[in-house]
Length: 367
Length: 222
Image (cartoon, rainbow over all chains, first blue to last red; front, side):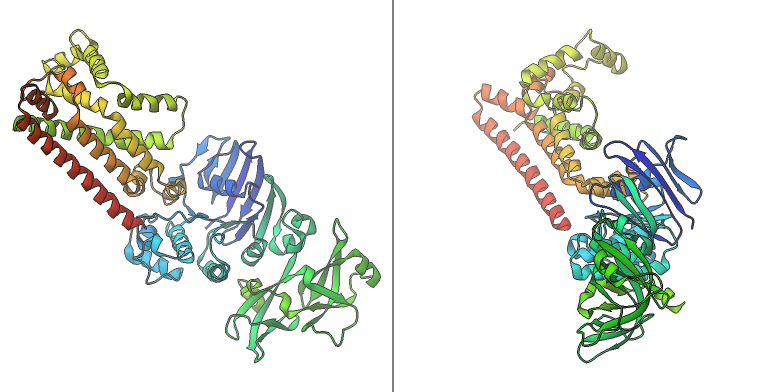
């Protein structure tokens, strides 16, 4: 598999000037508000829309090059597209939907693809007989059955309830081991983007505001201004150590033990924890008599001022970073400078259920 | 009971349906999915036979198909017989008169196929004809089916155009609707009643058949 390169420029119906590159096996999140042009970019890759000037190259094969007059029809592009509405063929069963995307329809192979998305046993149901989450899995299986050179996911989690969404996140993360092609995920949900992506492109009014690794973008107040500064967060890899009698789960993290409310998963399982920057309190001294269960010792790595009254403090904890968004006034009062020892304080209850997911970061824990 | 007239009517309806089925599918699909300048005009033209008095329409067809007209002469040179006052002429007239019945319901049927489902077909690697056959037609089928039933039933009952273009030649252009008119003119109320009854029965049967088929289709999709 090879990289996906995209360049698109247009003035109508929406202004657009974005280019990005996705490596094979990499998951790029295109984030932005509705109307920012992110879905239009996906449609450009698939050939469902043609901007004024655009280039789409997958593995040295040019799908679209307006300058050279190349425009491959959508059905000639090896693309797996998961639509926001799933767009399943309503008159076909689940397995028929999957077979419809195969070059040589093979029921057994289609069945194996359905197994991959945990849909065994529902092969003969029609879309109307499946739940939203099950329909999404069929849509993913159908996209994979195309043996795509690029997998495109258009807000694939927005039509299901929260509990189902958490399950689907875990499944996509597990599925990624089987995905060798570049993957583009369009979403406006920053939690989702951070949990699932390796790199991010933030799009607003059709322009790239910021591109970088997910960790970089999610730590950048400028980049997040468009999407909500309260989304600023760090990801910490951890391993489930034990479920304790009082309902808390003890995790082994690079920071030392981390206590969080009831994490789903067996002891030994790798997870990643999204720690919201505005939930972290900093203290010079190790505080005592505090209700917060997580007091993590670290060192100030950087202090990044924002546009408003806040600053973002990067705290180095055992080779990983925790972000703390505190007021500039507090940072001044504490006279925080890089290299200073600090304690990051995190209430257990401040970590939401859907901020803990099985990690692709699992590999990083082992490193 | 004029069996010859009934058979002729059924033959005329069958030919009309056979010719209009592909027209229905391709024109219906074209009008449903394409946007182009003058689309409103094309749609209006298709609907024209619906609002025009059949006699007026028949008159224009007669003028267009008759002797010493380009169409009439071409037909005469190709088949060695005139187009007007022949069964073939009836078929041509019937096809034109039935355009709105054949195209409109099919267009609605294709419009009902969600745009993202059609896009999904493309992204699944289906070429336009594959998409038509595997995705669009199965979903638009109730519309196309309705179109064909309406065309069939309407052809059986068409009177004005048939009389204008075909005359009333037994075995050639005398359809059941015209036979009924003849019987009434000849004070044969019983004969007219029987034939009318048969027409009602055939029409009811075809409509019941489509409703049953679309209900079955609806169950499959919900």
